Length: 163
Ligand code: GNR
Ligand code: NI
Image (tube, rainbow, N blue to C red; front, side):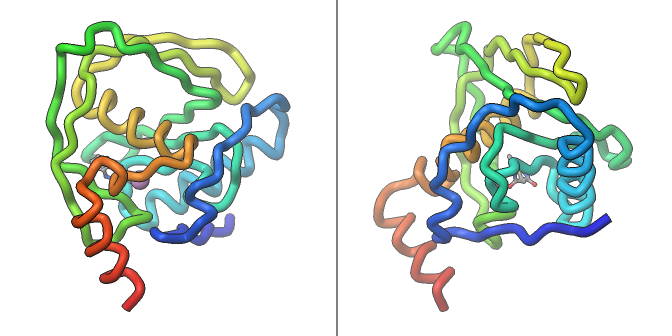
């Protein structure tokens, strides 16, 4: 299975908005399997299709220490249940290499998604899953970690990246 190339900031393709998956076929299985392989090879805990230049609403994730718990989220959406319950977490991103920044996000969300067969699921995640799924859904919207930082900081990162 081939590994895919991960786009890095400020590549304009990271700004595209992904479209919903409508076909739950063999090609979707192949894409998710290649994304998981790429995520493991890059030692990430999650990967959004946008990062590998595929502009469909597909996310893979593995939050386990052992790296043996792959998860796939197709067409994920979330609603904030309580916008006063917040969690600050030091985030990194494979598309913004070498940078970690503390980002504050809602901690109490309701999540819906589909699996590879198109079956619907829902959950109210907590902790790292809440942080990671929001980070990945941001990618599907063309949004990056750096967008949460001040313009000055973002510009510094952009300059560093173009060296
Ligand atoms: O590997 C990753 N680690 C991470 C740490 C804290 C919050 C989010 C993440 S996701 C990131 C992989 C990545 O860039 N996914 O888009
Ligand atoms: Ni990322």
